[in-house]
Image (tube, rainbow, N blue to C red; front, side, top):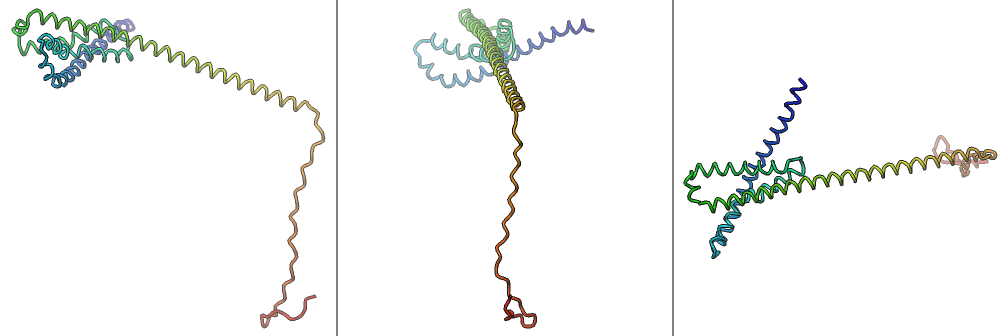
Length: 229
């Protein structure tokens, strides 16, 4: 049972890595195609106004392959900051995924005649652009792994510095506790005098004596005219 798990675990890792690579290629193709269409619509009039045909062709070729020149390197850089990816295999796999999908679409729309009409010059330039995109993706993956390693190292350094600060705080607290204990011990060792008696609580002053009230006769309710002795 353990031998089968040891055999299947690397296979599962490879399958997940392959699926992730294929997903990167499709996502880059979709995002790059959206950007290419929007950009080509804005640049169509300006590009057609250029006097040289090869300049128009070069600009169109670059805009058409934005998915492999821009979108795929950016996606792979972001993925490399999070996951540990192999630069060469990931770059080739993702780029080939998108390119094979485009080739299949072109074959369905134009067939082999469309490739023949293009000529070897255009096909060679497209292959050169594809190779450039693979190289940029490879460099982006390497840069992403390097930046991720630097970020992890900085996080470890910050954690170590915080650990040192916490240890210093604990040492200061221990020293303060020791000094407080020493002061308490010194106070206990010193001879003390007679204990001071607490002061007696003050008695409240008696209320001032006022004039005696005049007696009231029970029959009339008027004050009595008999003088009070």
